[in-house]
Image (cartoon, rainbow, N blue to C red; front, side):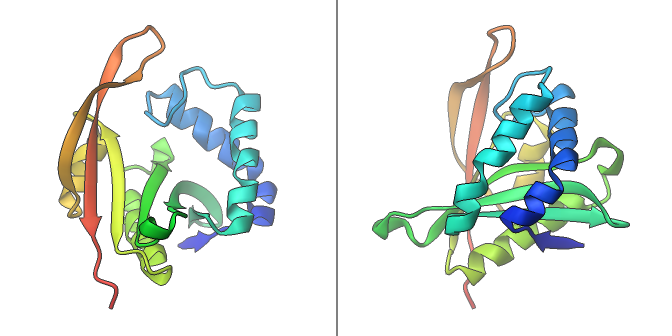
Length: 172
C-alpha cells in the first residue's frame, strides 16, 4: 500500500525513516549523502522537509507492507509561474529486504498519479549512471536527455555521472 504522508505522520514515523535512509546510504545509495550516515544527519534531513510538506510544495509517499514502512519517494513541485506543469521525483528508495518486489515501480506510479492530481504533466528524475535506478526509470518510460559528468562526489572524492531523464504524463 502506498499513501501520502502529512508532516505529523512523518514525525510519528521518523525513527523508521531515519533507519531506512541510513540503510540506503550505507549500502551505497546515491541520495545526496555519504556513508556512514549518522542518525542525527538523517533526522535533520527529514525534519527539514516539514515546511515544504506543509506548504504543499513537496509530496512525501510511503510504501507499506504489513503495516511497516518499506520505501518512500518524494515529488518536488516547481513553484515558479512558468513551471507549474512540472515536478521532480526525488529520494526514491526501498528497504534492502524488500527490493525486487515491484515496490519502487509502484512508488513511481503513485508519484506520477500525485503529479497528475496536482496538474503536473512533466516529470524529471535523475540517477547515477549505470545504477539499477537508471534502468528502472527507463523501463518505466523515462527518456534520457543528458548526462552531467562528475555530478556527484563519492566519500573518497571519486566523481559519478548523473543521467537526467524526463517523462510527459497525460493529464486525463
